[in-house]
Amino acid sequence: MYPLKFEPILKQLLWGGDKIIPFKHLDATMTQVGESWEISDVENSESVVANGPDKGATLSEMVGRYKEELVGESNYARFRNKFPLLIKFIDARQDLSIQVHPDDILARKRHNSMGKTEMWYVIGADPGARLRSGFSQEVTPKEYKERVYNDTLPEVLQEYEVHPGDVFFLPAGRIHSIGAGCLIAEIQQTSDITYRIYDFNRKDDKGHKRELHTELAREAINYEVLDDYRTLYEPVANEPVELVACPYFTTSLYDMTEEISCDYSELDSFVIFICVEGSCTITDDQKYEISLRAGETVLLPAATQSVCIQPEGHVKLLETYV
Image (cartoon, rainbow, N blue to C red; front, side, top):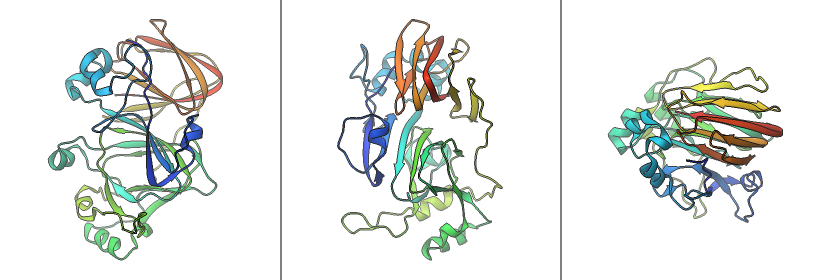
């Protein structure tokens, strides 16, 4: 098998901005593009292979066709024909709604779906751009509901001014909201279940307020209060820096000006590289070569034993696997 690229799935959204099209170097005139789904096995939003002999096949077809060779033995045993990760770029021109996602148990019970644990890597941020993650003080489920109805919920959420390179891990159950001016790479479980809690009384283009899921969210929220919801790390050049390791994905940052070789012979998983800055060439052990530049994502099959990454000047990559 060879490294796979996919056609981006562009989502025009009420709050979407104008950064994704130029970031991805696309020749498109779409406006209000809030999300680009880079790798997706979500029903009705399935990624399609963009390169090589399998061009035109959906990700779901690829998993069914190649099984362990594509995703790894343990992943295939665990997830069968469902690809377990969803990769996105998000551009918020306005604040997104305050929301939460259910964990595996609740999602399976209510929706017959995976839960939604995710992480954010901030690619770009306008001056003063902020986001919310977690509670800033103790809140009971009863008080949460009261604050939604009296428009004071944002007052008890932790808010951060963000800058490129900031990382936030969002386990299912953590209340959160992306703020205006943020361009983000998101890595998450394959799930599109979002409980919208509060939407700042916004109206859509038809003058209607969007549906809220206040009651569904109440049971899904983790009300724990932490001192700091950021994922802090020490940047190091030319070697992988682990950002997040959880049961659903492990993600590292590569900030490179020199060639790096990666040995995957002991890893029983596919590997995804997301290019957030610069460009590079990736060559695998079968001598397949693929170029990658900012805004592009590549999926290395589990059969890949090793790769050599050659930066063209300076490149930043997110590496993620299960």
